[in-house]
Length: 304
Image (cartoon, rainbow, N blue to C red; front, side, top):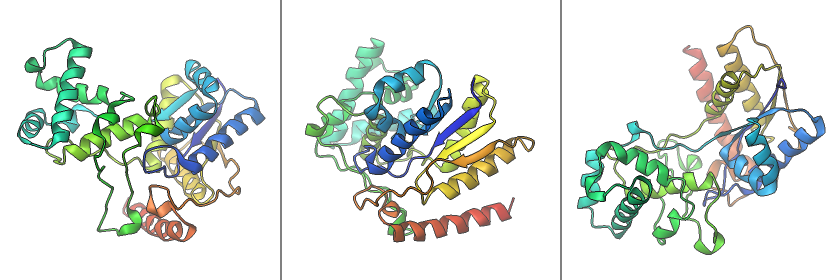
């Protein structure tokens, strides 16, 4: 297998979970880089870029997937540790919200359809699996028209660190949501209805470091020997992506020194004031955000 690993770092997304202009451009850069170099690289990308890649060249994506050349770092799924089954059942039974009623009905219907299990006989241990499989339903969100998704608010950090979330419009998705968009949105639907962490934990935010570790873990799993690492990221984000990739590589294997560079790092992407993450809406917002992140990273390294 080729020795070149390409890591694509997503940059924000739209409030309805679609890729947005930034990730579409990054997807085009990845496709162009693979074509130009004509090598069988291993490609690891965040899910926002993956959805954009599937929009642009679905046949190529299917080929990469069948060849095990593609890793998608997905939105957070639901694990047993995320669900307190007894509390969740009590919450759904006691809550009079119409959205709770719809969610309970969808869970029951899905259970009968997928497990051939009567809803009255639901084993608590099935709840986390049930909720997780619902994440993959492309039309699930359509049952909750009118639901306000809970935004990401971090008051201790300020408005700059917020993220706006909205339910996709039915008419824009007649065939349902994209492959990974649905996982994100369906979980946000559940979290917006079940607003109690003791029943259902909030999904963990995917960091730059998480993406790097996922890519390297996959390389180990498939026996991929890394000689070159090419980073694809927004021009304002790429220096930190390179910095953190270098640090993670060193922490995992002090003797491993692959060639590390970026793809089209100087090519600018116009700022999008409608993107979900407030810190990604303008250059000034990004610089304020990045200054805080770099200060936090420096502090974290100093206590190692």
